[in-house]
Image (tube, rainbow, N blue to C red; front, side, top):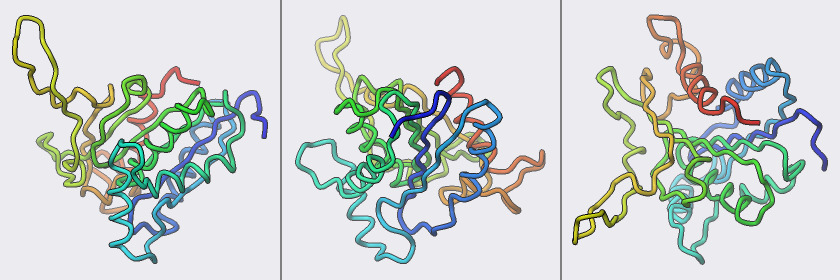
Length: 233
């Protein structure tokens, strides 16, 4: 399938126990925003671990299989997402945006990594929202962003964002003993978003998830993504 001159493919990847309608408002907002920028968006909602009707324990186990970067690990959700993306991938040079929430952020990264490493998508960007932490491949660090919820004091208040690690040992000039760098394998962009609520509420757009300035959680989340994507295309 061939992309139009000014098009973008967007994939919204849900985490565990997510309803079929959870991303609808986000999809509609992204459609309006990208059209206002002169782009024709092709937006797909994926449930790589199944939706809220599927056994929760099985979904959690499958997210765990995607958290490892080791070759041979199951990567159930990542492979499911990759297959769906390949069914609808329009052109290898078309901008391709993967936005994943919670475990869906892990599936988005692993699927995007496969697309990148197999040279099936040359212009891919990955957004992880409220996701567990997973070490990012060095040549993908500037193509991945990570957003998490913080409270009024700027402290992380999403427990899922505490799972996993970006850390690694790093040799430093003048030191004989390697030092632990907790951000060694982190995305270049990591930012907290002051939301009302927490892990389940990044894409909420109605009360009680609207602040005193009349800005909803969905707008805050998408605005951060848009700023990061500025100039990309």
